Structures are given as structure tokens and as C-alpha cells.
Length: 306
Image 1 (cartoon, rainbow, N blue to C red):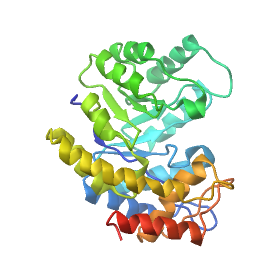
Image 2 (image 1 turned 60 degrees about the horizontal axis):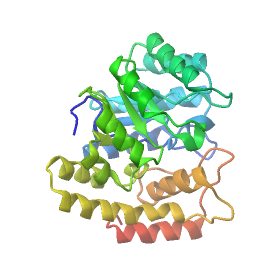
Image 3 (image 1 turned 90 degrees about the horizontal axis):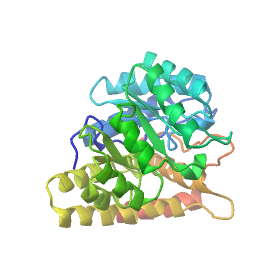
């Protein structure tokens, strides 16, 4: 496993909202403290779990301000700068840097149809314009482009990228990337939260688990077991977390898809745990109802969290 600044457990923090859909500052402060008390190694703000594409710039800035202030330098704060084009990413990254983040995370361009040459120019232009490290976010289900092993390896070798958050679901490609990248300080972060033990064995430096909002202690224990080479203990913890991940199946599938199922479940679980005030989500997502919350409560109890 590599040794890098971007390693360990880096939960993609959710953005608690009030009933009026403004940033719930008190809940967000409690959530940051919940993660820090578990011993996480970083916080990834404004990622998919943070509803970044649904938030206004004002909401994003407010959330970052609260997270950076509450973390108070205890761990690095990484900010998602998820925009369809290069200049928009640079603008968001500039705002994030002013608010004190230590790195930015961005995807390939989207909406417009681009090829590998445009994607490479995009990452090089962002890195040249931003005074903090840049990590790539590989999430083809959302941006419809898979970042190739060759591209990421080249950008790592050239010092353009400091790491990657892999949410591609392509574990073969991720393992090939672990073999291919020769820079020991390159962050190889898996977003595949139910196979973190396997990805760590393959060479990952850490994980960015959405479920880590709900059970950061479990992911910290998992990571430490991997570092200790105690793969039996790691598997037992991963199995428990994989069962807990069933909370994303609590939402009625006839009325809910990806973001509602994931973010909706995480926020509902955090509400049941008393960490955030409300499970309110951004439009057009919907809050999970009492019946769905009841299913989540059962899984929290089975996981030993309630």
C-alpha cells in the first residue's frame, strides 16, 4: 500500500439541509465532529454524497466554510469542483481555495461530447490554474466517460494529478492503475465502499465511502486492520459494513433512483442516529418516508449502531 498525503478514510460528507433547504450549520458541525471523533483521515466535501450538483454556489460556499472551520486543520478537507467545463471548474476551485481547502477533486468534462485529448487538456488546465493539489474523480455513471489507466498514469507521472477517487465500479481497471502508477505519493482512493478490503489488498491508499458518514468508526477499524495486514479482521468488518449498506435498498424502487436511494438513506440514518436534524434533500430528490426510515432503523440496529 502506498504512503501518501491522500490516504486513509476520507468520507464524502453529506450536506445537511433545513426544511427550507438552506445549509443546516448546526447539523453540519455535528457531522464533522462525528467524523473527526472516529479518527477519519480527511473529509471530502461537495461530492456526490454532498449533493454538490444540486446546490447553489452560495450553498456550496457556506458548506465549505462550515466544514473547514469545524475541521480546524485536524484533517485535510478536499472540495469537489464538479462542473461541465474547464473554466467553470477553475472558478469553483478558486472559490474553494479561498475558503481554505487543501485539495480539489474534479471529473472529466460532461454534457458536451469530449474525447481523450480534450479530457487530458482539461485536467492539465485545471492543475495549472489551481494552487492546491488536484485529484481526479472517476465516475462514468454520472459523466459518461471512464478515465483510462493510461491517462491517469501519465498525469500522475507528470505531477498533474495528486490522486484519484475511483467510483467507476471497474475494479479490474483500478487494480491495473495500482500496478501502473509509480509515484508513491499518488492517492489511490476507492469509492467502492463494499470492497474496500479487496481494494486495499490490491494497493489502494484509502477509501472515500459514502456509508462512512453513518459508520465512520467501522471504516476506520477496517482501514487499520488492512494496514496491520490482519485480513481476517478486515473481512469481518467489511462484511458488517456491507450488510449495513443495505440501507440504500430501503427506498421504494418505484419512486426512487440512485441519488435518492444513496443520499436519502445516509441522511435518514444520520437523522435516526441524532447527528443531523433532518433528512431533507435537494430537489428533485425526495426525503425517505417513515416506512422507509423504519427499514433503515432495522439495519442500524443489526449493525450495532442503535
